[in-house]
Length: 137
Length: 186
Image (cartoon, rainbow over all chains, first blue to last red):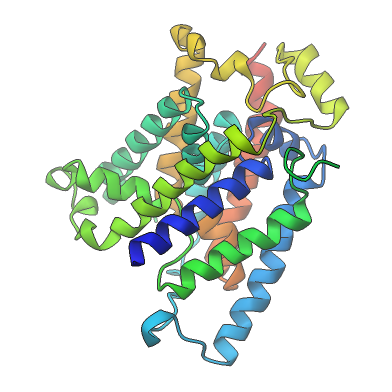
């Protein structure tokens, strides 16, 4: 039952990513060229509703299913890893035109070259795990 | 307007993404897509090489199910709900075509110049796709999250680290498009 809910949420998310064109290389390129409000509107409106919703959750102490606490842990403080990691991520995001969520959506849509991108992302994740203790955080 | 085939506008998509995040919070999880990459590394045995992957991945199986759903969603949307073309700003499309020879905006969902399967035999394209993916995977773990985990979840929870990461995302993206693309594609 739980797994069915995860699967349903995933399908819902996949359709939104594809139908909003947030999974399109062209839209990512256009966003970084400031050529359209589209991507900024998507992220911005999600964010405004997200901020309001999370404030409501906190104010009224709304619980997750099974009376569990909501998974809203504060992020560890820091600057270096967030900034450098973020810049590296951004370079890849613009080059491949896809971030992790849309990569899977595109695989399902039948763009099989994206599997190479996913392979690269797995490799990148793995290499981070190997060298992480040598990196500034 | 054709509700099925036309792309969804931002004011539909954005709120639905917020809804996705709240649904995941409600079922006791969180909205963050890149953790699935770490889970897959753990399942593949990466824990033998780095402690970073030595954790109970069974507890993280849920994110693989979400990912499986995203794959199915992509299949459904591309087969039944889309004409699989993306129209962008005509000036940007023209610039892409003139400067980089990518002339498929408006006719495809992804540029076949980079994503057509037969292009994988071109070493330039292959390296570009692997490198793009590598930086996404490496950067997401270094920064502790990606677009969903930081730009949506983290910023919604007013996390300063997420703001720093998102600023990084845009610095990286702008450097790639404005400084490196002219070098890569010339």
